[in-house]
Image 1 (cartoon, rainbow, N blue to C red):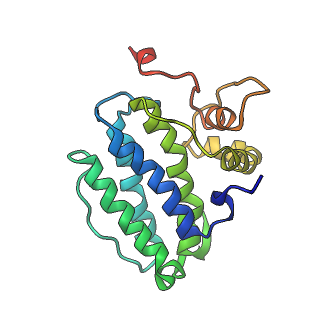
Image 2: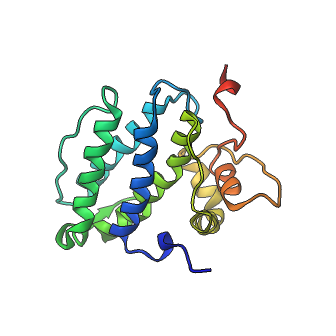
Length: 197
């Protein structure tokens, strides 16, 4: 079996593939107020999170500017589309992708690498959140899940202390890579909107 393209692609291509999958769920969403697996979030908050944290991350660590996009609270789909284009434009341009990026928490690296490492992987994980919240296909690339899990498990204590991840949810030892990854990042793989009522 050929390795997953997500694992072999360059950052610009990997972002395009992952962001397009997220966009498919965005445009398949019919109820933006639907509860999401992250406590206190609705479907629109999943989009808002991704749209809102990256611009400050980029501009705070580089000289690359960021365009204004529509409000995800008012029009999540339009916000996502504009944001996705902005990210892709940065990654597709060798000058901006190669720009110096420095952050006290992540160190120094080319901007494209920082986006790939910290943001694109976040989009991948939150695809499950939006899909589960809105009753859409929640299938993630199993090889990408397995690799992400293997990279995150040694950082367990650091990840928990960051406040970005809740306590891991136990799953069966023989669970598939996606279920194990979802449980590791603090989501209940069995979560459903009805369980929040």
